[in-house]
Length: 258
Image 1 (cartoon, rainbow, N blue to C red):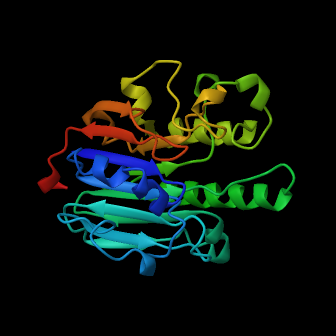
Image 2 (image 1 turned 90 degrees about the vertical axis):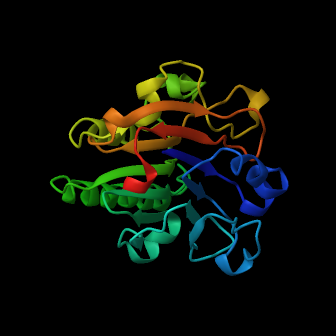
């Protein structure tokens, strides 16, 4: 099973740069997109609803900002939206497609700034609620693949200028510790890092790829039962569809047995 995750910086702009032409050649079973910057009602037509996929969208409160989507070849049993935070969900997005044995989520974490303490608090609430949800389902037999732009990096090697960004949102000690707990206490795995240990792998360049300021914030995080199925991972850098690069992961899971 191939799962592709991509943060679009605006789905129409990414489409104009050839994202859909590229991704439809990748034989993906599931495509998770974030930061659509367009309402579902504005995304009619074949380009944004490609043949062979069931398409699901979760708009932001202000549809001109963020928003996420999931495209899947197999129809899910259910779609869940939000983390139960009410208006605070508008600062981030979470949508989950439930299949028979596995759930796949597309998430976009809130953006935080040191100049806006409220944004730091909203981001913290988002991840605390996500932690509560993941802890709640630990004893269930269902497995999870959580795809998206987490807007934070875990290790020094995941930030090209780590010393410069230390203590800033996206690389705060508290954020890194939250990921420590996710991978440690809750037993989840950064799927890409299981198959690729290179120090120069980044998925986001806020100032452009030539600026030498890369971050690896686009992740597929999987529950313990999925970990043994991870086969391949790559960050696709052959074309620029946005400031983020698509993350491709292959799992030894038969799509028809989801």
